[in-house]
Amino acid sequence: MYTILIAGGTGLIGRHLSKMLTDQGHTVHLLSRTADPDSKYKTFVWDVMKGEIDEAALSSADFVVNFAGAGIADKRWTDKRKQLIIESRVKGNELFAEMLPKYSNVKAYISASAIGYYGDRGTELLSESAAAGKDGFLSESVVAWENSIEKVAATGLRTVTIRIGIVLSSKGGALEKLLLPFNFWLGVYFGNGEQVYSWIHIEDLCRMFIMAVEDERMKGIYNGVAPHPVTNKKFTEITAKALDKSALLVPSPSFAMRLAMGEMADVVLSGSNVLSKKIEAEGFKFQHATLKPALEDILTRKI
Image 1: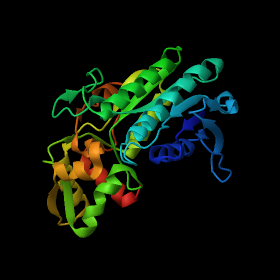
Image 2: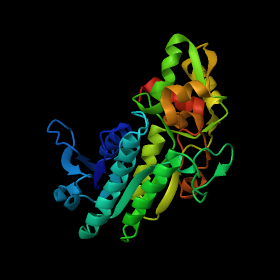
Image 3: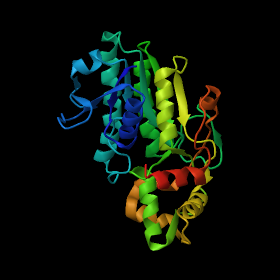
Image 4: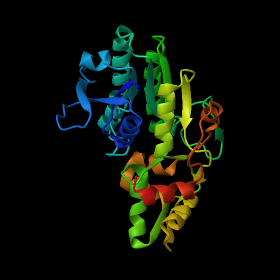
């Protein structure tokens, strides 16, 4: 069994991964901006903006998993917010690149990334080798994020990057917000609803991260998405069926989204048809490959 140090472990994915790892017998430690004596996991303090980290966190770790970074859709994208979104990710990876070569006990570094890397690409099939998107803050920010992850890989440490799609969980993230209109018997899709949503069940995603820890052959970039993406409108229709609700499907026009959210509307108005073939070729088996059963599982188990 291993000790896994998780940065950003109090977020949606980090919480679920911590539980799955401990259920399997591993020890989880957290890196946080503040100490939490009440946490069920031993917590160490770091400050990426100051380049500071409690080195005891690294000396006790077999693996490091990094989810840290300011929330993409938490606040409107002002210039200051954009800078924070990028720097909170980049500076963390740069700090690990500086510190990890001192600790031979750390066997691998596994970092989150995002399919926002690809930008708004319509129905184009996107493998990990596809070029980055050419326009928009989403792809710009993820390119900067991944460039900083490369600095860790350049140290020679086995490094795995997982580009995460839309994570299905009833505990937070995109799905929680998408479910709200159904309380009023409405299913809302965005713009024309034709943008492709590449999604993943939170447990399948966490299993990918666990595989990245345990499988020494894994290295480089993998898409963290299920094999059957759907359009935004189809996603809304299937969600209604999973909820067993006769909801009225209504569009939220693009111009209204832009007025309300500004440039951040890209998060819901853009789409990308992302492939999962590389991780499957490594031997990964999806437990939740299609959307309706995945949603039903999430909603029934309330995970």
